[in-house]
Length: 459
Image (cartoon, rainbow, N blue to C red; front, side, top):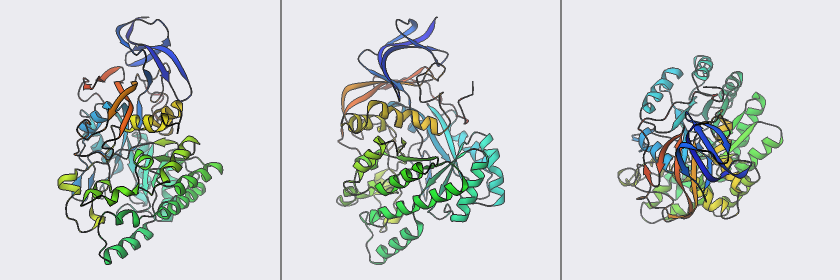
């Protein structure tokens, strides 16, 4: 067979296997795995790991937040993702006012089409529950939104228990998946008011206003509602042991319940909020970073299969001119951290190399599980014949020190400044097209396609 491209000599790592094989690629898809393959173009992966392209199920590009907008757009953000070995992202649609769900979806697609360099899906946000909105869910599902995002917090997004039950039931009716940002609104509101009234306004009071119980109680509550509705549920950015245990308990009850965590909760602690001056503002995100000891509990939950995936919740805002302003109120600092580029390498260096997770589990939580959960598998997140040739050649011996200057995210800092890595992506391919090679972006602009989900059966 005459292959367009052959990756030869590499050690393939999937969610379940490790073996040496060549990969033959035709028309942007994996055609065959074998030995001694020859193609028009050859890539030597000898001594390197070869894995399916990473899938980041949780990013916020060009997202408005108050008067600020997250600083990566669909071009800069997806280029940064490709540098880091991510070949698929899933972002969000947030309908405004009386806007129809499908209208908002088309507008959001328009922001990405012709600009995204990797493939992208979209979650649909349900910010209000009424008969009209619920009636639009089947149309949004048929237009490509398999997953629907809800919140138990924030003005303009908060759903009470009855509204959450209605949303869960409507999503269940189309065989979709409900995503939830779970924090207890009432506890947060009370604590924030207490701190501000006492003139405790700096970044260090952000985590104090959102203690672990805020997450634990909210996750337990929404999981109970999902159980009654019979709806599969995905809890984003689990940051606490209590939250992870709540997801585990639901799974052990037989629920279809998934938990996601993020690199910031695995690697950083609330000590960052004690930095001098306004530096702590860089780390404002919700849920916040947690106390020392909590990260290891999350690693344990990942290793024990109770947390199912690692997303980034990439939502970057410039420090200078945005996060460092004199807000005199920690509740007004834009929420979000950058991280779309470094996830895969961070999880390898601080997960695999430190024996917290296995090689296979690394690929599972970064690549395969997100694809399966969000109806993209086996076209994404796999190395099997017929899959899209989304492939990362990973140099597991390359040593890198993370700095804001060496990353490609459109933001002036990284929360992982100075982190030492051993292992970094060398080549990233999307549907057989080389996008990044040896530290250079070489792919065509606008290569990314919208992934209408479920995606597995599409040609």
